[in-house]
Amino acid sequence: MTLVLEVDAVSKAFPTPADPLVVLEGVSLVAGAGERLVVTGPSGSGKSTLLAILGGLEPPTTGHISVAGVDPFRLSAARRAAFRNQRIGFVFQEHHLLESCTALENVLLPVLATGRASAPQVERARLLLDRVGLASRERHLPAELSGGERQRVAVARAVMREPMLLLADEPTGQLDSQAAVGVVDVLTSMVGETGSLLLVVTHDDQIATRVADHPQGRRLHMLDGRLLP
Ligand code: ADP
Ligand code: MG
Picture (cartoon, protein in one colour):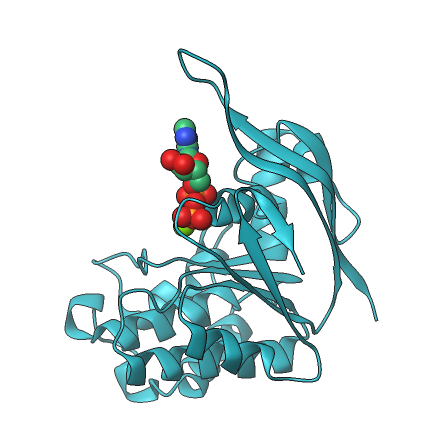
């Protein structure tokens, strides 16, 4: 198993007028390609903060992370952005699709961020839309899609560059249970193909079980900034 993620004694504190607010404390984790990790835990326990650190968006206060052998916080801002673009996929609770771009263009965004899309890349984006059940919606704008469909476009976009690490923060938080299952199923089938390490945060027990119920599934719990098995 290829090691993808190493989290070593990470803490995160935010300054406040009084004492710093400690949001994460002593978080350590090791995970490899193909694993499906689910993190559950109450609101405010630090789940989104952890994902922001793992995604290279927000540095830890103490401790280190490594994604595919690289500590993104040791890179310059420009190289870190390029590293994120190539290695890390993100699906948020809000789909964050560009409203003026079609479904196909949205899937191609990670490629368009660094230049023109090649013909094979456009083919891959089309294939991904087909794989998430939206082949007939290529030219539709996000406003013309349902919430579940928009999230499936967001999943296709997140795997466009075959990331080593795919992070999903409450990806089904705004969906009904049927649409939620549809989104989670495309998420897991995509990582089955790319071999990415998947880490999903959810407070939905049904979704957590669906992801973790796999030979490479693992469930973790976040409580008061600590990650528990
Ligand atoms: P969860 O995703 O588990 O609901 P979060 O990671 O979003 O939790 O937040 C954990 C705690 O950190 C909360 O108390 C939140 O208010 C606080 N927090 C998050 N981001 C910031 C920030 N930028 N500045 C100050 N406090 C923050
Ligand atoms: Mg959160």
